[in-house]
Every structure is written in C-alpha cells, then in structure tokens.
Image (cartoon, rainbow, N blue to C red; front, side, top):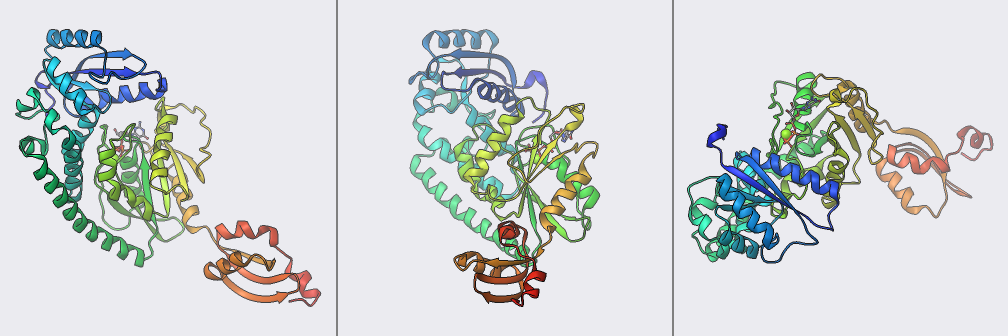
Length: 436
Ligand SMILES: Nc1nc2c(ncn2[C@@H]2O[C@H](COP(=O)(O)OP(=O)(O)OP(=O)(O)O)[C@@H](O)[C@H]2O)c(=O)[nH]1
Ligand SMILES: [Mg+2]
C-alpha cells in the first residue's frame, strides 16, 4: 500500500446510530472505521451519520439520507462508500443500484486488511476461507460495482478472480480450504505437543489491536530473550500482527517461558473471521497465563477491555490467571488507574521507555513460579474429592486416619493451598497428644 494521498481511493463513511446501541460503544466503533479504512489504503473525505430507530430493511439508511449521500458522493467524486456494519445481501443490491460508486461494509474492510497482512500459509488460508464465507450469500447481489473490477479496496484477495465462479464451485473451494487448514494445523499441534513435553510454560499476549502487544514482546525479547531471536517492532497500524509468533524468555528467578503474540481484537470482529481464526485464537487455550495488554492512554480503554473479555469468554479461557498490563503509561502523566479486578496482577508500564518492565517480569515469575506451601491439615471424611485432588497434585509426606478426619502433611500447590487453609492444624500439638 503506497501512500500517495492523491492516488488513494476516496471514501465516504456512513454510520447508523440506532436507539439500541450504546452511544460510547457506537462512537468508538465509528472512529475505528476511519482508522480501518485508512489502514486499508483509502482516504476518508466525508462521513455521514443517521440517527434512526433501526436500520431500513431495504436500504440500511432512510430514503432522504440516501439521496443526500448520492449527491455527496457525486460532488466529492467518491470511489467507495463504507457502511459501519455488516450489510445484508439485500442492502448491498439496493445500495449499489442507487449509488454512483463501490459499496462496502466494515466487514469487507477488515477482511481486506487481513488479506494484505497474512504472511503464513495458515493465515492466508484462514483469510481466504473467511472471504469466501462472506461472499457466498452475496454472490447474486454483486451488481455493477463489482463487475468494474480492477483492484482497489474490497476486491483484493480471492475476490478478484473468483467472483464469476458459481456458488457450487465456491462451496467446493471452501471444503478444500478446510481440508488444507486441517493439515497445516496438525503440524502446529505437533509443535505444541513438543513444547508441552518440554514443560515450558506458555504466556499468551492478548488484547485490543494497537495496544502494544508486539512492542512488549519485542521489549521482553531484547531484555530477557533466551538465545538469538528477533521480533518485529510494533507498528502504529491496526491488525499489524496476524500470524502467531512465539519467543523464549528467561525469568529472573530461573527457568524460561514461551511468550506468544497474535492477532488483536476490535469491536464487531466479523464472525467469519472469528470462525476462521478460531484455531489461531485458541492458542490461548494452551497458555498457562494470559497477558492482557491494554492501551491505558485510549479514552475508551474500558470498552476495549470489555471487548477483549467477551472474546476470551467465547474462547473459554477466563479461568486462566490473567496479568493485566496497562501499557503506554508514558502518555498519562501519573494519572491514577485502578487495578483490573479480573486480573491476578495489574502492572502499569510503558513498552516504549521500558518503565514497569521489571514489574511485569516479576508478575510473570510469580504466576509461573508460585511456590507450593508446606501445610498440615485434618480433612473431614466427607471431603473425598479434595483428598484425591491433593494426592494427585501435591507432594504428600504423611497420612494418618484419625477419628475426625484424615491428617495430611504435604506441600500444597497454590490453588489448593487456599482451600486447605480452614483445615490447617498445628502438628506440634497433635504430636504432643500422640495423634500423629
Ligand atoms: N507512547 C507509547 N507508544 C507505544 C507503547 N507501546 C506501544 N506503542 C506504540 O503503539 C503502536 C502499536 O503497537 P503494537 O505493538 O504494534 O500493537 P499491537 O497490540 O501488537 O497491535 P496489533 O498487532 O495491531 O494487534 C506502535 O506505534 C507502538 O510504537 C508505549 O508504551 N508508549
Ligand atoms: Mg502486533
């Protein structure tokens, strides 16, 4: 994408604010659309917003607004009009009939950016799968704008060559892609198995796009990297990282961990993408700890955090220990931010100047290396499942069956130590009473 302002396609953005949408969330998503369209290589020349109780089933926006938009597009000689949410096939058909230029929606812009960014075979296959799944129900709706092919936003990737192909062939192609993806993933799961065997703990970086995940991985690798590894420095653009990257880092108290970086999240991440990228996102399932990176300087970072937690919830990984990292603190001039209640640790740092990096390492170390605790307990006989969990996961030195329960002398892992606190006894007193 060469940035020569005058050669870039001119885009008009169209937003619909309905009664049902939270205004702050809507505003964030609409501002993001500007960033997305610019990232995709176009120049935003105007935006038009309509407040309406709900989307018009035929044309998304109302008739009057559509006339206004048509006139504006002609006046500004716009090349594309981008709508702020996923249009139905009916919307696309009707809008294309009225408007003098290409009609695109938020989903297509995101798919387009992903198509440009994907580097690995798996990434490319995933994007292609998402694009074809998006295209399938819309094939018949592609009217005049799409027949004017010749590149430009929304027509990159497989769309260029395959638009003429009928549904059946696309369905076949989707099936082939799924098979190919399965094979590629098999290879990655073998790599993961090997890592598991080596018992190296895995830390997954998660967070909103542009929060600073790659910059943090770069800083960690520079300072604590094990062996000669390099990582790309972060870039100030959306969805800079698409393909998973893994790096080995040495911990201050000894031992190493693997830190993985992957695709960032955003409002209304298209569901075709979530489905296609599920395997990549599910890397987080393998992680021992999640590092949730937040751009603390962003005025809507609370909404961004909620979005991340929603995706993590969908991936069923919220039970893992989370370290929340408020990054970009250098922008904040000591402004106070409360700790994230969902996290085990909250760290405030700046990946840019390195402030807070040692605290982050400390938090990682504490999560990974939290020592087992030596305890003596008497467990009532009705605590059968806890007893078996202890035998499975802890080192038990002594066991005696007493009148009021089982006496155990053991090293308890941190999660179980908490549950055992209420059963703790003083072994010296028991010894004096000749019970153990
Ligand atoms: N001022 C400041 N800028 C930062 C800091 N950390 C990262 N950045 C900048 O923020 C931008 C985004 O950083 P990345 O590391 O690419 O963000 P990311 O989370 O990997 O983004 P995606 O890969 O798009 O999901 C870059 O321009 C970084 O230089 C920080 O602590 N302070
Ligand atoms: Mg990145």
